Length: 241
Image (tube, rainbow, N blue to C red; front, side, top):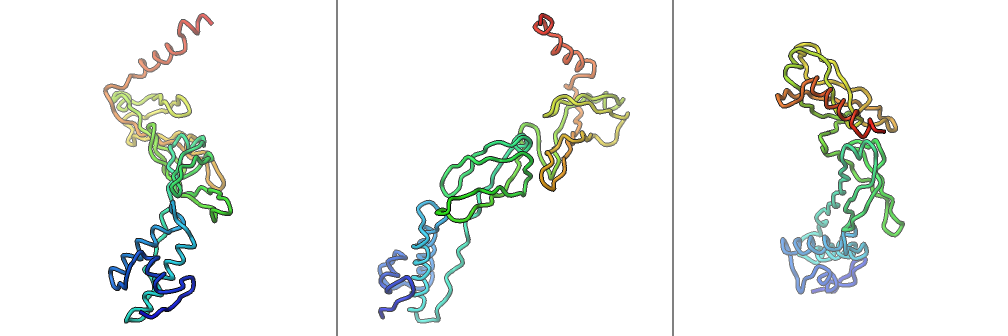
């Protein structure tokens, strides 16, 4: 075999060693060796090394040039997908710290209040680690709430008689009890509670809370619900105070 060189790779022997090969290899076997070596050296993975990553690509090109056919470009190396910052609706409402895996490391990152799904959270990195990362945010349903755009959604068990006859329904929301009035035989079993969605942030407006009323025979009637609320307030401890 002719001893040739390529930028960053001194010889064919070194190129073979970089790809973990002990002798001339062509075709699918050479491609497989390149893919395995370049994956292990990727700088965005634990144990990776940028200098070795570049040398492996140079080794591929040198070995291709040594083959019987024309030199080919190495197979495209797709960057690893960015980790998703998964948060709950309460975390989107109030902000907080969440854990995310980045490059094999577990980090706690601060999420500001008002983040929406599809937005990106900037993660500052030290100069030695490279450029800042912009991680996509996803709000996953939790605690009976889900998010879509600026708005939050939940369901609330409601007595069928109240839906039939109309009246006031008391709904326990994340911001406390809220009331809504139902018309008799209301066609749309969804009510909007203004301003109880995700908070305004940047160019995004304050969202709303949409509550789907689910007929349930187990739901307390209005009178029973008022009695429960009265009992909570006028407990013996409160009266003694």
